[in-house]
Length: 419
Ligand code: HEM
Image 1: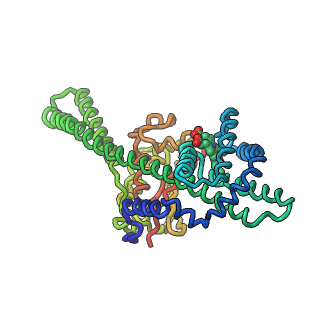
Image 2 (image 1 turned 135 degrees about the vertical axis):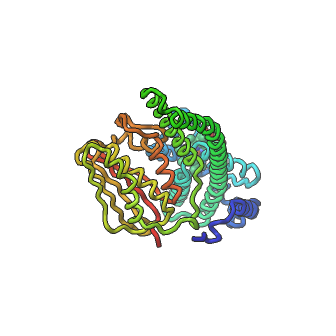
Image 3 (image 1 turned 90 degrees about the vertical axis):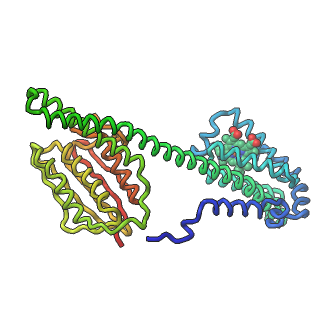
């Protein structure tokens, strides 16, 4: 499915839009005009200044009392000395708003404030929400000055305008800083991902070449001299060959996991889930045959189709079902595959009655090489679920689990539904 053109806009264009916005509002005079802030407002604010200065301590007290009331803001204000210092800075900030000297210093001071909060990690909802304290205080003070009656309309509008000017200047820097942080983080992720890809390719080449030699030597030994080797020696060579084969598979899995790009929507096709489940059943049959316990593999006759890549959906399910069989500790071991369509996606569930996974270990199973303590001597590379989740995400879906020790696990695979 082709993406709409707007969604495919290169980031350069978005940066361009941001620059245009900055230019459009970069000029202070233009900003003041936009907010309809005039010299008359400046005059009015300066006249109000002494009446607000009288209660500036109260303002700072109330401002920080409010912030200290909420855990989300309190955690930035644990240090009493810091709060005392901030009260002073807050008072100066309020006063400078009413001095109404709208020049480069005024803008720079607001930018510094926006930057300080963005860099401290104070969320935008907390930062912007605190401006309500400015509005509330302005209204209450004017109400007091009017003898607890309707506040002066022009004075109130001047105050609101200057509070909006302040909020716009600080928030703009705040968001610019946050956007730059995100862009930098993204760049680091992209750079490290391509470095990882390169590393994985080189390493796999360096590892696979000698491994291929070991495999050949073992094969030749067995083919050419197998009959002459004492029984134990032939077994040892066969074990060495099997281990080398396993290592080969491990390298392939590592390489695919490290280099998986997102499958573009145009390369996802309707996949018949019922066919996939039949193939999964065939693939896991040897495991069922090997298991001393009875294995009951149950599934619906009807499955909704999904959108993806047939072989990849199958790999994910083979992984989930074979894990359920391998780790099953009950007789019978029951593995059930179901699927339900929910709006534009399908949730496939692989449920088992196995040993289950403790809450603290549930996310661990998706990490590379992190095999659980309960894995015992069940063979595996420790990459299966890591790889399966990668595949699910690559197909625009997700893979997660719910589990209860001794009761069993339910792995959920979400995939886009076929249209
Ligand atoms: C109306 C919104 C706010 C205004 C006008 C404001 C004002 C200020 C000012 C003037 C400073 C000093 C900046 C400098 O060093 O130049 C500052 C710093 C600080 N503010 Fe706010 N503040 C606001 C909201 C908040 C909120 C919601 C929190 C949450 C707890 C907060 C926590 C802090 C902290 C922790 C610092 C020190 C940052 C640093 O270490 O550099 N502020 N604020």
